Length: 355
Image (cartoon, rainbow, N blue to C red; front, side, top):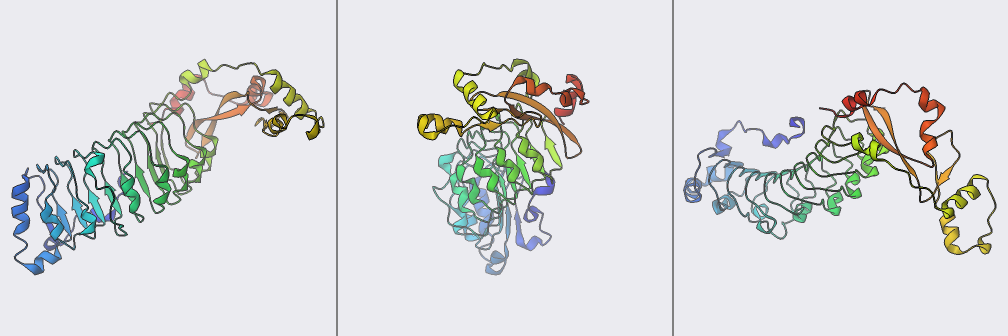
């Protein structure tokens, strides 16, 4: 993921613009004293653009930082911070890093001042149990790191971050991904590993610029077929997912109802139906049928379907399991399917459970 970090996080060669007090294990009062030494020289004070305070013992935010009105980069990682003020109201930050602290949702301001400057926000490794809606104020954000928290959901309003290039949400408690995430047209890297995801929305295929998709250590059984549309994908991680190991052995097919069988017969044989001759509910039911995806089958299904796993070569590198819906279990064993050079189950697993 190093290829997807902001350039602004690089070390600044002009030391006159940097305050670097990292790794000193300083307490808040001592940090405040050190920052105060810059106030006497107004010229040097206004030149400061980067403040690095990671790996200290800051349980509270050093308010002296707010006086450096030209600060662009602020790194407060690996402290014991339990709260932060709306620093964006005082400093034109482009990068704010506060990973590995003790920040809870209540420790963040209820809202952030509209900030068009911020490009990178890193709140990974904290104690955020809910997606911080406040970050949606940063409309020009490009790199968002929220991994290693305890979040159970992603905000459905994530689509507001239209300029996002990287979204890192690994190491949370996520059980689903909102369909609105598919609207992030500029996203190049999506990290969803080490969660509890069982499926992905089909419109993830709308992320045309996506290059890296990390899904390892989840509960995924299959991937949506639409994922093959991601032609720019060069990194796909699927290891430590159930995928089809248990799913295939436990699949069962429940017999179709009389209603389903009747509707299928009508559709298959093109029997004309007079809308005025049957209840409206049956007309609606007849209109909700789906064609079987098997090109050799002309059947349809309504409520009852067979879940079928098909392994597909992807990007010339991977062999991934895609979930298809068929009208009958017989459609999964066509002549073409039987003649296909299918690997053994052990070989399939080796190709699917990627490193």
